[in-house]
Image 1 (cartoon, one colour):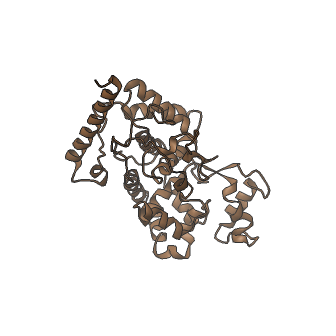
Image 2 (cartoon, rainbow, N blue to C red):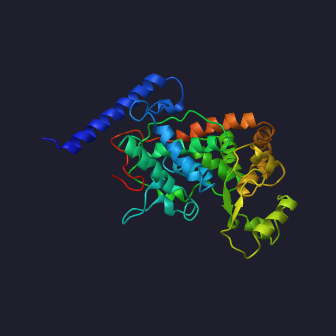
Length: 341
């Protein structure tokens, strides 16, 4: 005779498979997300207040942490680029298990895990065992952008949480010192194109970054002992005051010095004026390869916030559809985001 726990697991697996089938039937001819078993109203019956619950947690968190919205969209980005949007980034390290949190691009800079945990706890109280941690990241990213003045989009849902992580892949996330060629290759590797690269980079229109990521541009660009010639002189002088040579590399600076907490098109107007903080940002406009690839897209977004917002929303949907885990025989709904069940 089957135990009650195994019977419950089979029921949950059957329900998950049924929901995937419903999503395919409902949205099957429409979007890539739907074709992977994701749909907008995935929790319509099982947890109808999921969006409002996550939104409430984020609003409360923002009262004491103005950086949290930018931090949460970065978590979603870093999760999706490593074995798909499966919540693998949220898993903690334990004996015999290396977490993506410990990878160089995440260690000491990725943050917001506590807010994800708070959202998970609130959802577990309202509808236990229903909403995945991977879907919480997707919801939190959209809510964070909207609450910062940016566009909303249809958040396709139905992802399961992985039981594995991939620290080796996490070491190779798109990085602040990547040139345009490397950035393009890394985006193409997960099915995203040049337009997605430029649009998603626009998330750097809000948030903070440490001085250590700009030090070489200020004092020793490409080993020349000279500043980066593509850096606006007035902006460079400003950053030298903020990030003195030999100073505290962990000091924080606004990615966008004009409207640092607002989601708008100023990231692109900054690139036009050579005020990109990260090397990987300015590359989109200044790299020799950019003139026929990314620079025209930067110009278009700098001239039209509507064009940026519309493209960004579409690119976020595309990113959220990177290898979503929907097979209940492989994934699960974690009870706690930092641990497998």
